[in-house]
Length: 336
Ligand code: EPU
Image (cartoon, rainbow, N blue to C red; front, side):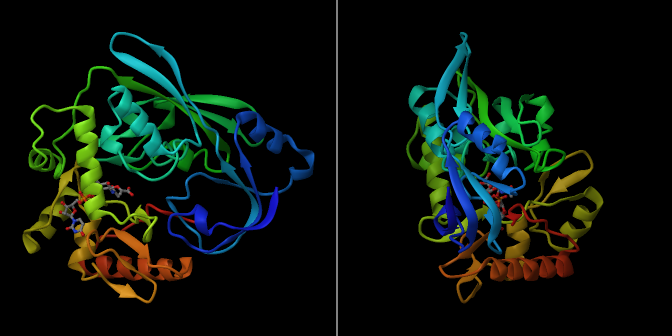
């Protein structure tokens, strides 16, 4: 265990923040040992995955536990599917590449998403028409209080758009240690979303493959989203709001270019990136922080910015969008 550890390289925004103490665990046994340690009984604990969806506004007065539990293991297979158990600490994209290389379909649209496998179910990560709820068989956890393990079935995870039981009822109660995925041996491709079709055409792809779809997604993401290794960011900063159909129709008559996508019955999902662009924030920069020039939904730290500055910027954006469109944007990123 180390003390006063900088987390700057452990969060994709690249924000400076110090952990009171820090430990990295590589197995469920090591994690259990820490949870059971009587000397740490009253020490607050904070779980860190890939640090790709957090905004660190201050130092963390807790024991930060970095989950580095690895391993990709085949559980079973039949003619159509394969079940893989993956340690929570595996990098999400490495797992996707493993599936692409082995011809297992289902996660290729989720290529290049930063973060770890264990963090993925928290907010039901999604991109290009696929969410992990489509491939999660179960999620393995350990509870802080009882130190007991519990496996949640897909249904028990209560997955929704960037939502799960782990963000709500179980917040702060358990730690995700592994995820079991059910992947397809017979691919079903999802290429309807956005630019995928066009990107495949431009690349001269004649017959679809898992690798071709993954490559197309990687190409699109690289062209729009800043690489956290170069410019600090946490992907989409806000969720795309779902608004009542009536409000959408009224806004659409005032702003005919307003895009809208199907959502829950009676609601329309509108892209927060469009709303932010329309309020003039796209490409905005104030010192070290700003709004990405190619994707208005992504706030960036050019280096040396603080969590407080990014939070302030996000509040200004929320205010503009609320004033112009009467829509409240809610953050997708977790403020710590
Ligand atoms: N748009 C603009 N201006 C912008 C950005 C977007 O007008 O600056 C509009 C365009 O109409 C565009 C539409 O928004 O067609 C959708 O944009 P995009 O395809 O880039 O997706 P998004 O809705 O902004 C969501 C996810 C992303 C995911 C992409 C692709 C959320 C909060 N974000 O973004 O996820 O990669 O779709 O599926 O749902 C993340 O969660 O961190 C993330 C990157």
